[in-house]
Structure formats: C-alpha cells, structure tokens
Amino acid sequence: MTHRNGDETDGFGVPRRGFLRLLGGAGAATAAGTAGCLNSETRIGYRDWVPGNFDPVVMYMNVDSMHEHGLLPDDEDDVEYGLTFDEVNEVIDLERATVLVLDDDASPEIDGEEEHEYGGFTVYDLGDDGYAATDGDSVVEARTWVYVELVIDAYNEEIPRLHEEVPEFGAVTTVAGEGDLALVRPHETGEGGIEAGVANLAPETSDVTIAVTGEEEDDFTEIEDEIRTREHLTIDESRPDVVTEDETDVLVLEGTAETEDVPEAFGLVAEASSQRDADDVKRIDEGGESDRVQETDEEHDGGDGERHGDAQSDDE
View 1 (tube, rainbow, N blue to C red):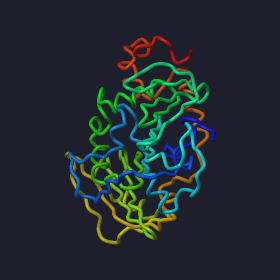
View 2 (tube, rainbow, N blue to C red):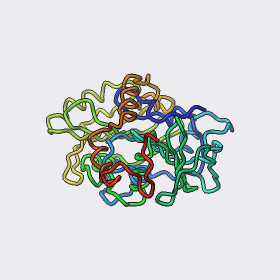
View 3 (cartoon, helix red, strand yellow):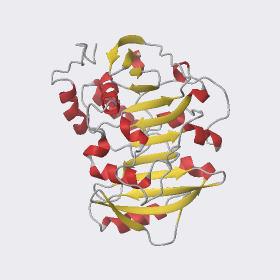
View 4 (cartoon, rainbow, N blue to C red):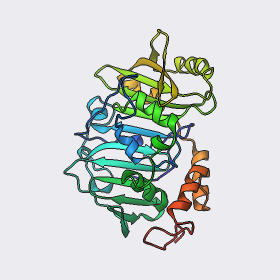
C-alpha cells in the first residue's frame, strides 16, 4: 500500500490519507457528543495530538465503528507497518501528519532507518515517504521530522495544543463532540470561521451535528444557508441553536445522513486537490512552511534548524 504524507486532500485542505487507506479495526472507544451538552472540561481524545501551531484541519475516525457499519472493507489484508485491519483503533489525520492509535496487542514494524529516540517514540526515516515514529501504542507519520516531533510534543503536553491556543477550534470541537467520525476545517463561508462536523453512526441513518464559528454573528445566516444545501445531509427544519462555549458563539445544526452516504457527506471521497498538494510539498522541500507552523518550528528547533538531540537537518 503506497504511503505518501500530504498528498491526499480535498479542495478545502481536508486530509484524507487515513480514509483512503481503507483501514478496518476493532476496540476503539467512542466519545459520542450531543451539541450543547459538553463543556470545556470534556476530553476530546483526538485533540491531544494537535499542536497549537497547526492549522485547524482534522479528520478523526473510530475505525471499529466505521468497519461495523460497512464504511470500510471487510477483509483481513495487511495495512502499513505490518499491522492487520483489526489492530488499528483510530485514525487521526491532521493537515501535516497522521496518527494511528493501535490496539493493545498490535506490534508495528516500521521499514525504515532508525533515527533516534524522541519523547518516548522511536523515529524512523522512510526516505521519500517522510518520517514515522512509534511507541508501540501508536504511530505518528509526516512528511518531515519536524511535524512528527511537534505532534509527539503535543501528545506529551510539552507544547500547547490547538484547542488551548485557538478558542474557536476549542469551542466547535467541544460543542460537536468526538463521535465516530469527525471532520474539522476552516469554513469557506464567512471570515475566520471553523466548522466541526460529527457523525454518530447507526445501522441505516446516522445523526450528524455541525458546529460552526463565524467572524461576525451576521455570518451565521449565510453559513446556515450553505450547510442546508449540502448533498447527502438532511438538516432539521427547526431554527438552529447558537450556544456560547468559552466566550465563543457557535452555530449548531442537527441533522441526519444515510449511513452509507456519510463519507461522501463529509467530503472524504472528493477528488484530491493535486495542485495544492504539489505546492505544499514544494514549500516543505524548499524549507518553507505555513506561518503558524514556522513560528513554533523556530522555538522547537532552538532557532537553528537542529533537531532536539540530533543535529541532522531535514535535507540530509
């Protein structure tokens, strides 16, 4: 199975690497959320892995539930790193990295050059395929070692996480909950909006919650109109709620989708944006990164481009 980091997104920069691998698994616990019933103390598991300087783009999959409801293939083929389908519990795709959360009995085998130990993980150089790291319980992979180590730092609480740094991201993810499938991304309608969509899967029809922020409250009317026109989603006709979470106003819409259509409703089977992917890889190869990532990379590297505990640069 070909592994590439950063080369599968939809038109909004939504990562689809984990979904396109068609992983299957068992044993993941689901923290299904109901809009308005959560609070800032609620733990949304995937947020533990998102560094505070990453863009607000996340796809989370409870692989067991996706498999149970027929959204992943029913077979026993191996996936990457010597893992079988029933050894991967969760997939967390970030814009610049992917995390595989593994079953207790899984034993990942990474075919790469062992680089060094970092934050309880062993980091491997995969050559053209980037970098991967594992502590036996999970695998973190990314195009560059910087992104791998930033994700590990977030997991180990060595740096702030995104929901702690960006109130809008924290608000929409708290209100929407985790569910079986979650997709967080900047909203294309309204300046500065972030959207979190969550599906709680069921045999035929699945409940969907969509929580969105806007730069101005007036944005909510336009945002609501856009969401109601989306294919494969049936939004409740009742007036949507506006709740306040962590001093942030959040528009909340409830609805349903036919379970077999949930991936398409969440944009996970859209055509990849090859030009954006090519531009992203080009920036990385040239040593460039997004403003949010670049700022914390300098702190992470000590300002000299050197890795913690290892002076090898990304170009070596």
